[in-house]
Image 1 (tube, rainbow, N blue to C red):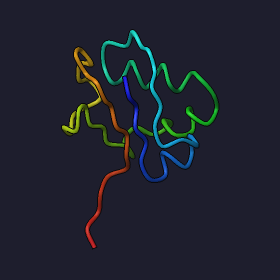
Image 2 (image 1 turned 180 degrees about the vertical axis):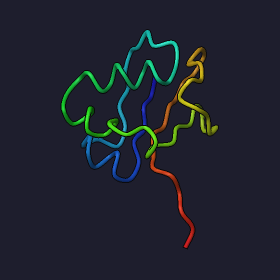
Image 3 (image 1 turned 120 degrees about the vertical axis):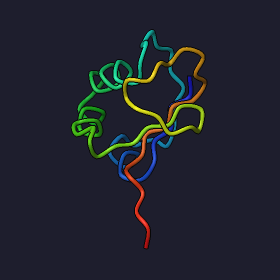
Image 4 (image 1 turned 60 degrees about the horizontal axis):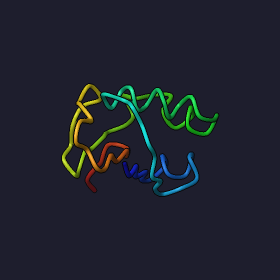
Length: 81
């Protein structure tokens, strides 16, 4: 599965994307798995209310299923300006 990181999430983790093998059933499970990797991941996922997630380019919730997902993207909420 491809994992994409945008904006400050990318800056905290240090890479824009990576490919991982996961047994996570939901986005929340994936976040727990990633946060347990290293401190930089834990810092990026410390406050989920400051994050949005998309599965295969469709905005979704953290309780969404990962079944059949090819790509998960994490990014901060977007603001206009």
